[in-house]
Image 1: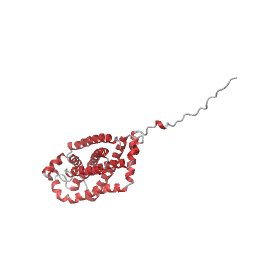
Image 2: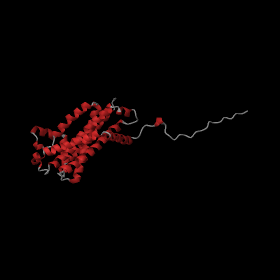
Image 3: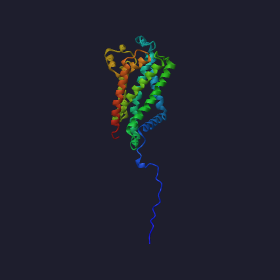
Image 4: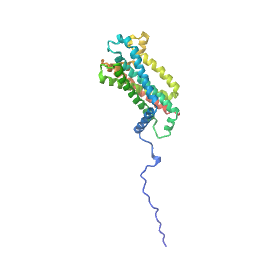
Length: 280
């Protein structure tokens, strides 16, 4: 007597990947998705958008109307309009304020649990920082465009460098802002306190802005302040932006501003990633 052993019925192999083998999206996709998430979060809070636009518009109005006539004699050799002299500096200084908000926003995400949830997902932490910086860079770009349109429509901004010079100055301001954003992200990743971040930001912003050639020529500053302004890195960025806008001879100043920005970006990114990996 023989017995027949029947093999168990075969089932077609599943074409779906096992869940345990999924390691998340690739790095560029993570950056795109997280950048979109940060932009949507900004748009859902109109107060952030409104007040981020009001501050530079108020500064533009006050400085152009208060200092315009008083300083025309000092800047006549460069241009016949104070708004043409002032606007390149407003582009750069506005970028500093936007860079500070990158650090504050990162601290906020750490405190409200968003970063903690990201760490539970297959997400590379570097993509979170890059996405935050790119989202803030996009907001800054839009902010500066609105500033340029307002300055043109309301105050007659019409630089000798034309559209090409203005766009070049706009791009330089974005590079400066992005590099400083990484510096503030690095500080935020180590400090992790909103109050301390804002205090550091204000302590850094005001000397950078006012002890520079942003609003008055260096010759109009007191002797000791002129020495400080000459070594202020913001002076080089403002002077380079102004040379581009006013069609002045562009020497090594532009390349110095670009090189300094790239160096700050690289150093800030390295410290930001290292500090961000620390436990919350």
